[in-house]
Length: 443
Image (cartoon, rainbow, N blue to C red; front, side, top):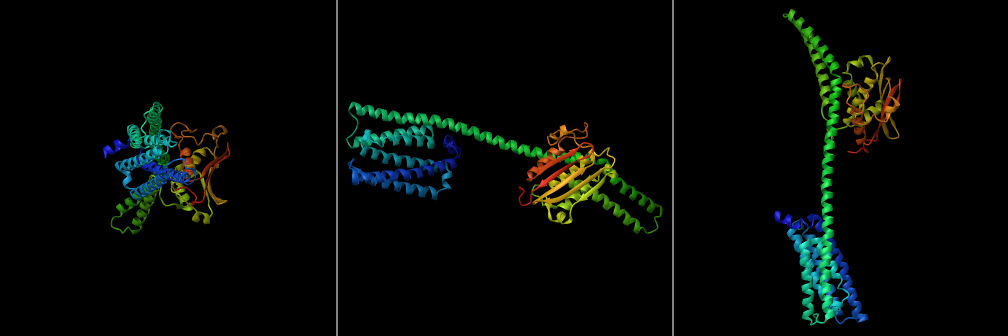
């Protein structure tokens, strides 16, 4: 296998080589038909050459060889992936073509034949298909066959003009191989550089996707960190209730405590629900996860954000039509977007007199519009154009990473939608997420 790779290293990938072989076969149909028709016309009408009848037979033979090669290539498509088979096919075609072309050239004038220039095309094909040294070997074979036929027919070059023509013919073939090899070598080097660059781009794209997923997960952890105080408060209340019940049961150890046990189970279920919300939100997104009804998704967002104790002084308004809440389903990753927007809204209303967080949804022209609005401080006009840029933030150091809106923007864009903002200083901010029908969103 290693020797096969070395053998094909100069000519490219075997699959590309198979395509070139098939192209070579397709080109031979034109050549065979031209020889056949030209010889027949000369035989019947022109009479320029004495061996026009043999030229007709040669054209038929060329087409017959092509039919055989085409059938062999198509029946052995799987075997052609082996470099040795490819080389056998190419060499067979080259030698057969040179034999027939040499015969045709000898029959139509020898060194003054009008078809002598077609040897140049075969030198080009040999350089493209076989590489440098094999192409020189093909040129040597072509010269040997041609002059052997000339000698067999008693037309070997003897006179000075004929000898000079023969030398010019030989030099033309070798010079063609030299030039084409130089050009193809440059092209192959460029192709290798392009393929290497393409591989680096693919690797960079993979790393960017991994980094983007890491940024999304990082933002979730930041959001949970901001809710840590509220989370501790939410768990502390059930624990305090359970502790009181346990103290009561300890003082009255002889009495049945079915009601107390039921109370404790309620508190345990409450803690379990809080932890389930937290772990569900912190879990990395699964790209192929089942979409969730819009209403259920917004409810989960409100439950997660409700862990923030600052929400105790904020009125939360949910304006989602029931039919829309049930019929429209969104990817789970949209929870991250809405949580990010809701947390930003809570941050913006830290000093608001009448803080109101509104999550609304409506359908317009076959598209879903989800709005997250607040009555906070708003965004300064000079900052509006930068809020979706990574690491841009107006929050104090330690209170924001500058990634939340950037990550949200990319998630929405990935699902075929767009994220827009409308803000007025001192009045509030509204983020509008516009999404297409689920069937038209990309997978």
